[in-house]
Image 1 (spheres, helix red, strand yellow):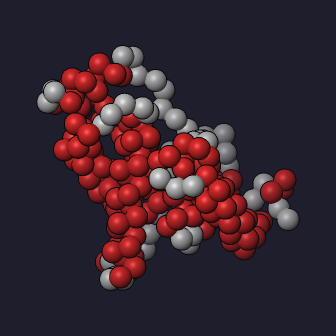
Image 2: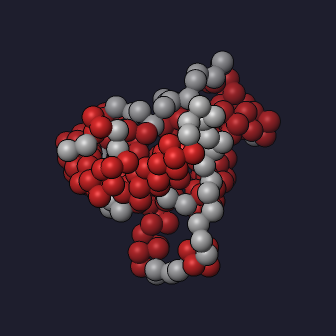
Length: 198
């Protein structure tokens, strides 16, 4: 979901372009959740997402002079998406198994809704994990389009502009990604709300 508008964002960006570190920090604080969310959905790992988010802001700080207007959030998310692509390509060329993967997974879920029963909380967390596993199984091209559309709420044209891709390509990748997610979630259909079960 897009972040709420910042008051006088253009002035803050101009100050950051002139080297004002505090102005850049205002931008970081305003957009850090959106950048982290995109990176987490793309990478499927909180540590990698944190690294990508940090690298996104370092890159943005170094290249802020190249920003020429338009939607600053889209500019930032494009940097983040490109860093995710690069990381995924590197991982594909040199697959590794981290020590964390060998250890039992830690729960990183937020505090549960107190109105839910322990069983409902467990089911909710299992569904969240299954959805993220399905997203992680997508190709990087499909994953970024799905995350930008269905998680971040961008329209097709904005996604095409961010990824420098044809509009038809975005629609095609999104359609294939949604179909793959639908098929993947059938393995855990008992966790799905009844209206989503096939």
